[in-house]
Image (cartoon, rainbow, N blue to C red; front, side):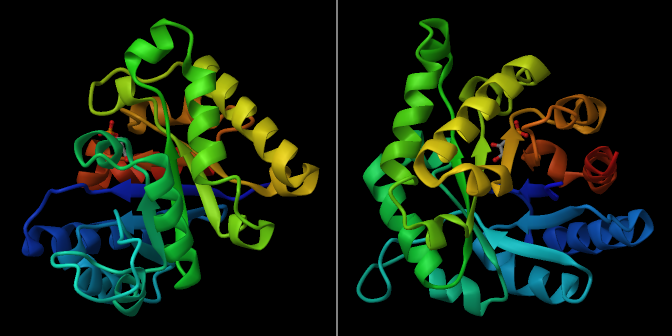
Length: 254
Ligand code: 13P
């Protein structure tokens, strides 16, 4: 039985004080839930990372960043390296989020280089993939996700690949209130697992966690997480409210 992950992606939200308050609340809620089969990750803005890591230390909650540089160090003004993220107490980083791909022109190749840099620094990666609405409407979604995985992830050595989890986030479901149906999610997650199997074999495919992201909330999480190839969620808006986020953790524990 695979464990589940519920990861919050706070995106570019919350002042430092608000972020610390939210981390405290999530920690309290988690103490009550005592999740046995679910790992919890808070992916915060960079400036919150050290403080939130300190707050959740020893609570079983891990922290992560939402992006990192593909470079190790040097004259890259404004960039943050994977080793800096690690030194702030984080264990995870989200790479290849659709907002990075579309708004910051991140290519599959850059995503691959960031993933490699993160793993080399000892971080685990939440690797995002997913199609836009027009691609789904012309029935191109499987091909798009396959390309993102082939070019950004599945070329890694198996020892590196095992440090990653995959998040399927259909772009048309992100922040729109429209979720993929459980059947649509399962169909893509099953396909992704088949691609992992082709690349790394049955055992690795069976152990790989594939998260769903896109308008996931407490009221719809249980239904989506009950699908056999859905191993938890990457949560945007609903992760900014601790009661809502706690409801999603409870759904993962069902
Ligand atoms: P929402 O949950 O707000 O749709 O965002 C999903 C997401 O992009 C998580 O990375």
